[in-house]
Image (cartoon, rainbow, N blue to C red; front, side, top):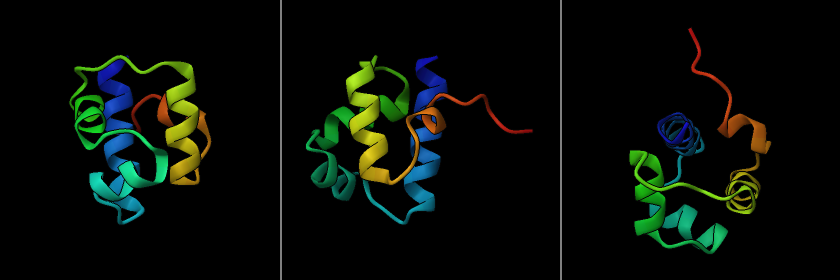
Length: 69
């Protein structure tokens, strides 16, 4: 699940044209923490998922949807 969230986070962030640093500023989480999430080495809380999703302008569900294809 951590890797799935990480892949989705990375994909959505890139689709929005944001760097980790820019997303960090938007959601109030460190760039290092976001990097760990994208690598699948950090375990986000539900609250963190909501904060990131809000900063990205997507639903929190988008961060946990199974891979496409």
